[in-house]
Image (cartoon, rainbow, N blue to C red; front, side, top):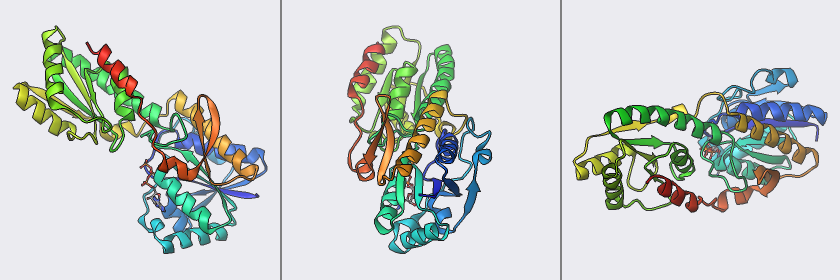
Length: 322
Ligand code: ATP
């Protein structure tokens, strides 16, 4: 192993820069050269390479987004695209690749590993936290903190006007963000895709909470909840209860901003862990953190196994929302 590539792919997540920095500087410690690949697999196919050394990654640890850029690239899912990707890696004399992204990125990485002899390792970078093999993904903690800060502000105005709010957070298929945000901001209810939403129960909860003296109600809605987006849920609940309500979609604000200290730590550990895997000659794994330890999980398990949402925490949220 002489020369490794690093790319960020899929949705951007705060902490990706910190992970790239860690990869580059750790590689330096092993005497490895590093090539940055711009715009994920799209940049790989277009051979958009940039040589990276310790100084090229100065002053990025605290920045959101990704200095390498990211992209979604449909061509990579086709055999011709994959072949082109493999040729690009060979052209740049890359013999190891660190792919930072979510499960889609890992599928691409695994597909490349199957048609080349290039060693490949994944680093989980996605705000959704929906990757098996790691307790947390890079960007999740920052996204949760950003949403909590926004909802704290919403609570001020909701209490002042004695209002019902439906706040939508990201999570097209999973409720990890919604659940943690809901508990951290003292939400009155949380709707997640993993648990069927019963609108009768939701309406009854809201009514009894106001009747019990609450001055405001904040319902956190994961964007992929089975009852619909926050606007739809608000419309249905507001109509049934004949109550005025407001909707706030936090949206892409959750993706941006400086990574939290926790995300910087995770990125630093996992970037270094990925380089160690390559330097020691292993391939086809994702490095994650489980119970504080850096662990390796075969790439194919990261998407074929489902990471469970902690339903006990949902119960805790309900207990504390009395
Ligand atoms: P996020 O969770 O933030 O959305 P992700 O990595 O899951 O991140 P995707 O858009 O699903 O994001 O995947 C990123 C890219 O990985 C895709 O645009 C595509 O280029 C590549 N990819 C996804 N699935 C495959 C596949 N089955 N084969 C080859 N490449 C794939």
